[in-house]
Length: 250
Ligand code: PGA
Image (cartoon, rainbow, N blue to C red; front, side):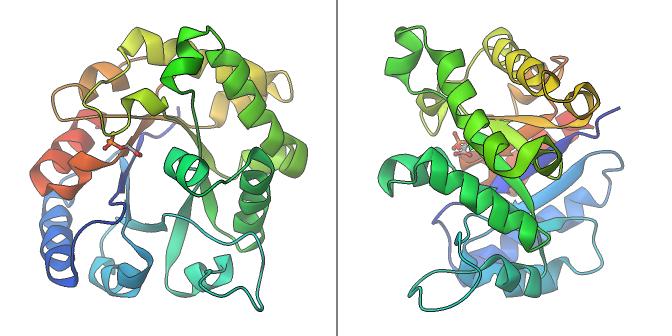
């Protein structure tokens, strides 16, 4: 049985003060959860404080990005070891906003996954097609290309150390969710593609769905056989919404 995972990606939102209030509320609500694994991914500058606030709770800490290099003269970058140092267990890698707005290529994303693994972090590898790609019927080819770049670099055993998040770009922050059937189709495809390398790993690896997951659509998405939880953007900024999504994964 794959344990469900719900991760909140705060993106570049909030302040020190409201981060504190949000974490407090999530922490209190999440104390009731027994089965779902919960992760919060605040901006870099709040990681230490959020981590300290989460101490003693079951909620894990994640970062939203990392550098592909281990240390040195890379102004403005943050290394995986630094993220471990402040208590991160997870790191989001290859989010579509990083790919489209900051020019991260499949190759760079693969190097970042390798860097995360090297630092002892579990990467949350994001992939997914744009609307144009879906309309061209190349959804699977795009997902395959993005997945294969990582498999080529870290192997299926490396991939197995983290989780995959299928996030159709057209569903991120748009209020437009993939239907459970649409998402399931891609999740099953990804699992089959991983199975071609190692069937046991394919059966065990968690594949999250992301893209406008809300309290009112989470349950039907999480009920699909190959959807193992969610990567939550906008709704993770509201404790009530985020907790309701975690509850749906219970
Ligand atoms: P959203 O973002 O839930 O706001 O659509 C998801 C994500 O970008 O991970």
